[in-house]
Image 1 (cartoon, helix red, strand yellow):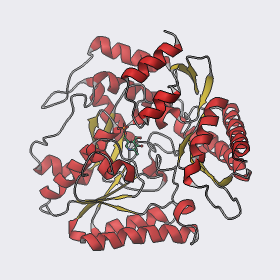
Image 2: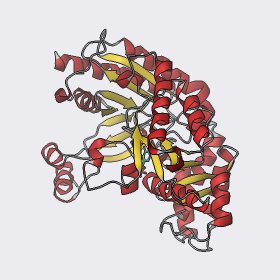
Image 3: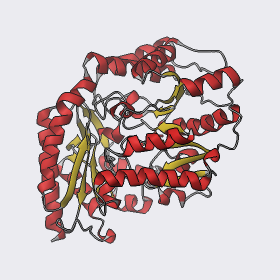
Length: 450
Ligand code: PLP
């Protein structure tokens, strides 16, 4: 079919996620037709460097035949069976074992889901169930952070801290509170970064007191807040948060949907920050996005209670541990181990990206360039010396994002923060290309604003 016909049919029948439908109808969609390595191709013949690894998920890059083979072999053998009641199948068992081997030592169980949002729905139910079984049914409040993204189901959206999402679709799930995020550039520049990290942990403690420590069940956060703007916390933040949670016996839920599977240079972001989560929702990089699968890794404390005292847990999804998805995830983890992808991010390509990315900080439009592992952000500013933002109405982030696309690079914007999260297999030459294109996009953005 011709591009224009696709565009027309798309406009007439397809409601896209996170999309302004009128704007899409006017501008038309970009039709992505194929991909290999770190590049996607559209129906008009453009080759575009995917600086976002799809949606932070194609960790092994596009076109890995081994993953295609794993899916088709499993579909021939057993395309579907469920894991409800007392059934299971080899791919789910093997994947569970592998995941628990890679996770922190005290995490020895996993509950499979079809996505990251379903994983966070599972978290919400599991946390409250845990405390009820512990004889503390009042421990129901879950504290999250402003501007966090934890998914789009009702529980995921409620756990998330995105005000525009809360404003749509009626009341959120009760007993979820939000505290400030450790976003130094955006919200903390009155203090030194390390002092600000401690202030954010103190804000968490203050909220716990407000709610009553006997009522607070869990704190949920990403190691590095991804969709909220690649927010890398000051070094003081996580140790201070750990201390607060331990003081009041509050569970720690670390959302690893983006940070898991090598993105920060360890298997899990928790390991980078020395965290011992009680629950870890995962998805995305688990299968490098080739098939949809997620899950919740469960620490021994919660698992023991659920198993010993819980009876039946009335919760599950038709596609929990789907055989083909599990087989692809398993092969993905095998390839990551065989090719030492995590070590490569930590010791080689991550530090290289950091060095190259930092050069963009010299651009007049950039107030801060930051990165960790294979996540990076640029803060666009109107006045570099004063780090003053552009008026929101100018939509500078979206302008820069669109220019990037036209130049052959996918970067994502949230407000005036530009983000990258490329495939972990990106080469040094491709990093150079990414940084060059990002620089050209900044130049062009500056020209259009002049
Ligand atoms: N948690 C985090 C941190 C995410 O970034 C996302 C998706 O971007 C989700 C949860 C939701 O995952 P999914 O889109 O697979 O439902």
